[in-house]
Image: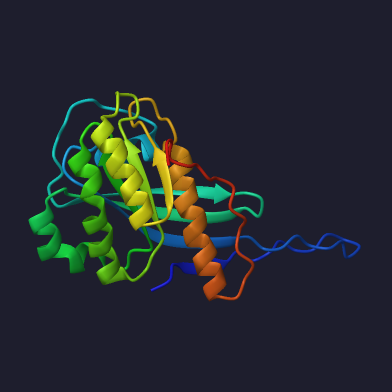
Length: 214
């Protein structure tokens, strides 16, 4: 199901018949933040929504849902992202995937650069979402970039990019590096898909970041 869109009514024309600017578009979308436990999903959501970081680890039970509205330039498209921070338990992922992933419009797949196994697991996480939601846009967040990444994680990340082409970001929830940019990028891709669906001109892509060493 595509993200819902609506056109915000234009203001009354100015005297003299001056041309009106195109009406901005309002998009509502669900984004699923997925990945193994303790990779930093909750911290990334907190950094994006509240611009805060808490180094205490509290495992997510079920799903945490937060919202943030962003505005995409240059056409002022407004996107309300409902971010679902999904627990990192693979067995429950399969049991509860219909409830968690249905209606998803984009995936943020999060791995830990210091733990190669969490990068390797992202293929299954993204596949699980897409089996329910269809071929929705996916961004890969290689998190904890403030820490030294392991050689194994770097190899897994390169292999993952080959298996599942998409945009990959080295992020740090602690410092905020690339967090805002990664979420803005998925918002732009979701808005693009929604506007193509309704026959409008999609917003231009502004962000693109390659994985180092790929």
